[in-house]
Length: 267
Image (cartoon, rainbow, N blue to C red; front, side, top):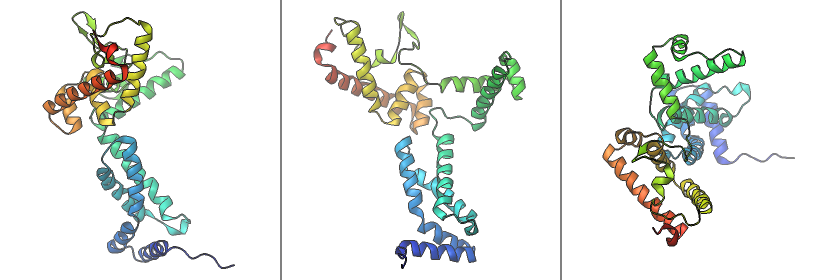
């Protein structure tokens, strides 16, 4: 039986790839790259939805991964170009997100230092040895005590915290995330049932926020980051980040008020 011919775009891509493998010039490479840009667009779109980062920025990074994939492609191994290119593209994009899009921006060295320390302490626990003290751990990692303290503080700040966890004391009362979002003048006629319902609705509302809004909200309330630090992570000034934070709080209070009902938010 005759085999079905390849679609025109696949034939064109195969011809360009054959030409490049015969003559690995920059012009032939660029022709193959341009013909396979949809691989980058598809991967960048998926990662953009997952991370909330700019689709255009992720495409720029993905193009570099595609170029590296085309340059390293070896047809004699029997793999298609797409099978080789997608891991390259995904790897470049995810490395970019890991290095540039952390809630707390810092050097890769500090992140790796914290990860090495965690592995070292885990190895000692597996060997039933006592964990190293901070000074001993810094010496084992080959860094100064101040550098290790900075890496340790960063690792602690990046850990998720509970919404019920107290962060600081204001006028003798512990401040929590839900204390900022829900009207503090609300009565307590329904007791535990009302508090449970508010926590449930609060979580539903928070899940509807985009990544940048959650980063701003949790970075300020849970991590107590300065406005300047939040603004730098968002690409704006500290004053703008503060204004966006207040606008976000006002919007959340309105949404929670509409959901809970006016009677629940009356003093």
